[in-house]
Each structure stands twice: as C-alpha cells, then as structure tokens.
Length: 535
Image (cartoon, rainbow, N blue to C red; front, side, top):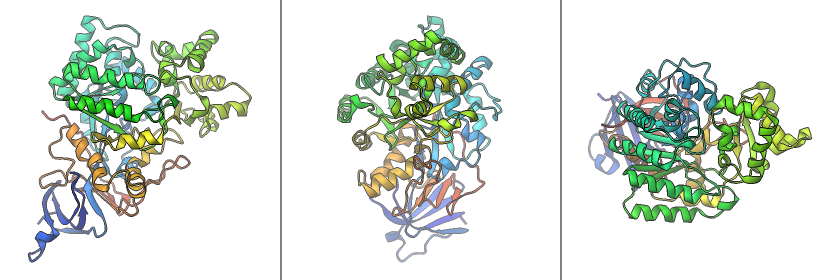
C-alpha cells in the first residue's frame, strides 16, 4: 500500500491550466497516481497508509526560489523555516557572482569577508569543500529544502585573476573557462555574475561571452546581476541580451527591476526589449521579488575603483581621509557605478543589519536619520559603519516603483525569486515572505495575476529553466515536492517592522514526499538534497 493519499485537494498543477479536484497519491518520494473527482465517481477511491484531508486547500508543486542567498544558511540552520514555511522546496544558490565554490584557501577567506553581509562570516561553518562538486556533496548530507547551484563568475575571477581591475590574460581566460566547465560537469546549472560587485564587475563583455560559450555547451544558463539597475538600466539589459545571443547561451535576468527615480514607469521599455529578443529566437527568462525596496550591502555602493584589491584594500582606502573624500564625492555627486550611476540619496538607505553588536542602534534607521541623530554628515556615519563593521553592514534601498513591479511580474517569462538575505537583525521581509506575498497580495487582493498563472510562475517555469524533467508540475511520476495552502488566508506575515514573522495559510509542505511543514509547524525532516544539472 502507498504511503500517502492527499484527499479532495483543489489541484493547481503548475501548468497554468484550470484547477481540478482530485485525490493525489504519493509513494517513495513521487506522485504515483492522480484520481480526479469525476473519474472517481462510481469506483473505489485510492487508499494509502496515511490519509490527509485537503478539503478547502490548494495542492500545487513546491515553489522554486530562483534567486536565493541561503548558501550557508542551509548548512547553519537545519530548520530553515524562512523558506520551508513559504512553500519553497527548491532554492537556486551561487547568485550574483559570489559564493563559496570553487575556491582555494586564499579566496575562501576573501570571499567570506566580501559577502559576510549576505551570509554572515561563516565562523560557525566547517568549510570542508573547495570545488563545486564538494559543496554539492556537502548539501547532500541533508538540508531542509532542495538546492541547485550556479558557478559564481566573480569567485572564479578572484581565484584566477584576483581582485584587480584589469583584463584577464589569454592563459587566465583559459583557466576560467576550465573552472566553469568543471563546475558544470560537477552539477552546477549555470553561471552567475555580479556586475556591480567586485571582482566580477571588472570582466568585460568579451570575457563574459567566452564564459557563456562554455555554459551553452553544457545546456546551462547565464544569470547576471547586470551592470546597472539605475541610470544605465536599459543599456545594461541590452548588453546582457546581446552577449548571450552571441554566445548562444540561455539568459535568466536576476531580480529584473527598473529602480531609482530615473526609471519610474519605464518597465514597458524593458519588456518591449525582451519581447523583441524573444520574437527573434532568444532564450530569456527573469525573476523578481514582489516588493519595491532592494537589499544589498553598504559596501556594494562604493565606486569600483575603491573596491579594487578586495576587502582589506577597501578598508585601507576608507581609513585614509583623502581617499575617503574621493569616495564621498563619487557617491554623492558623480553617481558611483556601485550605486548604479545614481548619486546616493542617504534618506533611501536603511541599515538592516550589522555584524558588530555595538553598532546595533543604527539598525532600522536610514543613514540620514542616523547621521542627524549624531549631528554629522551622512557620509561620516556611513564611513564609520563600513570601518567598524568591517564591511558587514546590510542595507535596504528604498528606490523601487510599484508600477514597474506589477508590470514585470505579468510577463510570460517571469519567475519568482526572493533575493532573500537572511542576515541582520532587520532583514528585508522578502526573505520570509516572497511566495505567500505573491499569492495573498498580488493574486487574492489585487488580482494582478490569476492563481493558476501565479503558481505556474513559481513552479513549472523555473523548473523548465533549470531543465528539471520531473519537477514543477503535479503529474504522475513527478517528484512529490508539494505545497498545500488556503487560497483565502495565505499571506506573508513578514513586514518591514517585523521581518521574521512566518506566513499564514500554508499548513503543509512536502519535500521528496516527506512533510517538512506539517499542520503549520516545521518537522525535523531534512529531505532536501543538491539538484544537479541534467546531463
């Protein structure tokens, strides 16, 4: 007898088609039968060792977070309710060109310092891997939800070229190509870049194109955080479309937004650009989070020249008064490339987390508010934070536009990605609320998407991009990564004031046919594993 029958569920199967009522039978981690209500009339209904009454609940595939920053959180926190409670059953890691494989002893330390604001310093982690394959093996020991991995281009460049702003030599380019190929052979699903973060931002288009040619050979995709979401946003999108088309590589645009005042209401221009490329045969998808503020580290705002050489070089420049004044001028007057070419507006930069406890009183305030409370200039406050927190400060950037958010999420190639940074005492609520916020706010309350459309955006579309042949749909033979939610009550509990509040209306989540959330509570099940690139 099979393990589980989910009885009388309203199945929204991820295809975008209409829902139907059915009994769904799960055994040994897979969906083994689906008996629709009409077909069950007059015949014996399926039975199993356990029966779950799903009356009034929607059964859908588990949600795929196409842009996650849980690279260490999955290892540090077996509970991982931040994502599991949202119905997320698969996360894509290695984002924005910076993560923890492939590395050597030198670059591991450098990367840990560079992205401590994203993932913490990692002092509580045993970094017993160096290659992509070894990192995926570490995930296979058991994690809360499944995880796929992108080879991070910035980490590869740090390993081969270092943190200098220069072109790679032919020999260095050959080695980077080999490292990308090795990562893909070991199971990575593609390549990511952070082109406003060092050292990835120092790569020119020719270098990126050559790496994308490697990705294309393996059937992976390129996922860039491109060079500007502000003053040069449209040109940056065009650049990514052009170089991936030249390389013959699939493109997935990370957190595809149009931010800052210069881009208010300009989402239709972006979508027109993408529609033209799609009509010409380009393979493009994108992800977004359903909020207007962004989230990153404070150090990411600095001009690229100030970040050359890595974390210790940045701190040395900040400690020098004359150099720090040059940095201020680029931030406040010129518009630093790290701040997307837009002069920084300190009243939009909210401190969301610090690594140094003595700085905790800054959290929840904008840089300007914190500076005003101290009777000093905003740059003085920001500089002190960067130095005393050793670049570990995280921020929210209140620079987005609701009309752009809604327009982009309607697009046919859209998928969901939280871009969730779990660090800090006051993180962005998207880390804990992205997926129920789509379902509750944008589906039920606003009607921006139908329920069936939205579920497809969060399930089958990302599975298709990841080339996963047995995930993303409620189908016989598919993996039993499933979520049951109440369409009348599902909502994000997280807010900007209380960002770690769990969602409501998601009583059950299954990974590989096992309950990781049951009756609204996290179980002790660690059914997640690394999801490797299909051969």
